[in-house]
Image (tube, rainbow, N blue to C red; front, side, top):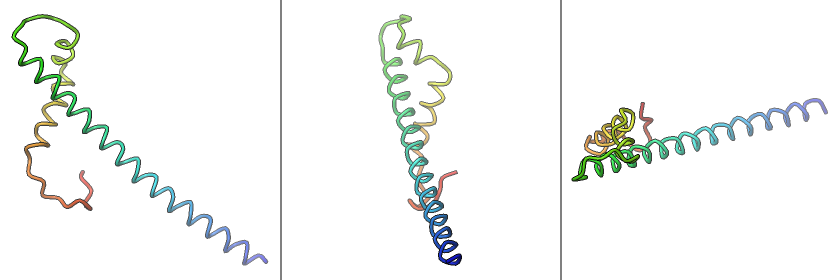
Length: 93
């Protein structure tokens, strides 16, 4: 009886460990998608502000001139133009 309970406990722990790994992988994918989306949005805002023929200080221009937004846009542009040498199953550091 003790061995049966110990075996059940080990199965439960293994199931929990596997589920935690699955959840962590899914969370990583969601974070990567959110960061990519942020970069694409920043690129669009910065590009629109640079194309604007008018000099004004509307909220969109203020956001586009923010240093963080410009950095996200720069990184997005780098990611889009850089060759991707990694395989899909490799982790990107």
